[in-house]
Amino acid sequence: MQALTNRAKIMERKPMTFLESIYLWNIFKGMMITFSHIFKKQPTIHYPEQTRPFSPVFRGLHVLNRDEEGRERCTACGLCAVACPAEAITMEAAERLPGEENLYREEKYAARYEINMLRCIFCGLCEEACPKDAIYLSETFAPASFTRQSFIYGKKDLLIPDVTKQPLEFAEAKGIKN
Amino acid sequence: MTTLLAIDWALLTEKLILIAIIIFASLGIALYMTYGERKVAGILQDRPGPNRAGPFGIFQPFADGLKLIMKEEIIPDTSNKALFILGPGLAMSAALMTCAVVPWGDHVELFGRNIALQIADINVGILYVFAVVSVGVYGIMIGGWASNNKFSLLAALRGASQAISYELAMGLSLIAVLMTTGTLQLGEIVKQQMAPGHLWNIAYQPLAFIIFLVCAFAECNRTPFDLPEAESELNQGYHQEYSSMKLGFYLFSEYINMFISSAIMVTLFFGGYDVPFLNESLLSPNIAALVGIIALMTKIVCFIFFFMWVRWTIPRFRYDQLMNLGWKKLVPLALANMLITGAVILLWFNK
Image 1 (tube, rainbow over the protein chains, first blue to last red):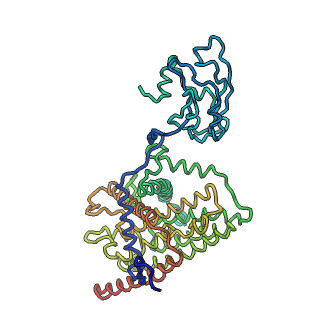
Image 2 (image 1 turned 90 degrees about the horizontal axis):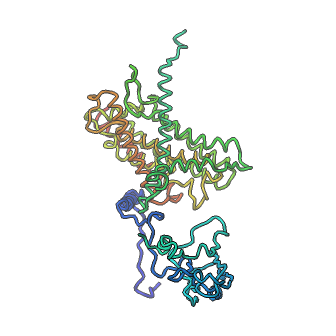
Image 3 (image 1 turned 30 degrees about the vertical axis):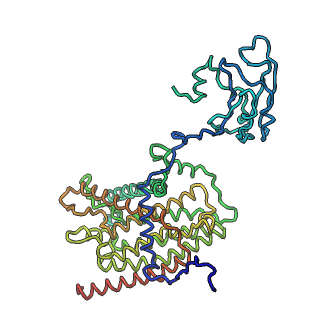
């Protein structure tokens, strides 16, 4: 058949010679290739000891933020829950009582705030929806666990430590090593 | 009459101790060969290999063994139970029996006794090796057949026909070696190679060595001849229905086979426990024996590494390629080698 293009390569299929057919020379060549790999650098990252750096736009576990006086920023407006495409966020609002001004920044706060990490797709829409800058996504991910219940993160898991009361824990949560 | 019944208790104890040492050493070496295999595989593939259990992962074989022992033991309902249990035992014992005739060293002098470091220096040493290796295929055959599984049976048939085909070329290649050595006794073959002015047999019979090496790969069911356990075609191969330590025995016997065939190859072609350029007779016998054992083990380890290196380099042969290589290439080559060796000995040396 006439070739349509000139790119077709005509293969020559000769029967193997006796020396080729006992494969030894080609096996030897292959073994030299594998042997050279002994001296190659291993690209392995030994995970628990070494970690791959995250990119600056990495979206990991959520953190509920506080303001500079250590008051919770969240006002339980529910915009994050509405924005969440995976419906992973639930919350219950409560009114701030007199004397709690140092705990909550505004008159309304989240009494219960839960994120189901098994539902969450880490899209970051909650972070974008939040008008109070109260929720943001950190550079860690949810550790493995044996029960589904343990993947429902409540306020005590999400809330960042108070910078005025627990500066050490705060620094740790921020990833600032002393 | 009393002399007939009298048992040389000292000899018996000495041999029993030697057997125990050699068997446990073989098992220990096989245990660490599984670790070595994984490590070599890793390094050849640019990754570290097992490195979590202990420093550099050296406790990995114990973790693997523990895992195998703790697994649930399943004996299929429709299997032939007696043979199903016999299979792995046979594979294991056949693998271990070969080490009886390998000379592990010259001799040591302990408690005023002259102890040979060989369990039995029988005058048909090589024939014994061949006989026991042939029994080894029964382990695969019986295990595969008794499982009552079609894949196992197919794999067992493959294993049996492969072993039979390659035993032929192996035997023929060895005839040439035996013509030059003139003895079947393994101890004697090593002593000949140690003699001053005499090179290792590899120098006289390189072709026989290559054929023997290829056949040894086939006999051990190692890649590229591991067709009995070709996962892609036969699921798991002849040990598909096996679990727990029975499976462990099969896997383990492969490593012991590898160790023993390395030992046989070293003995036949690489001077056994001979250290090149060293006159062992100048040393005291115990030190010479120690040096000899170390030399033998070094050579064996090199061969084991070679086995692993080949495994992680080349893919498995197709079944027709395997048979072509065995019958159309290796057997004629071995025959030609035998004829040429015979002609040279007859015409050149006029023996």
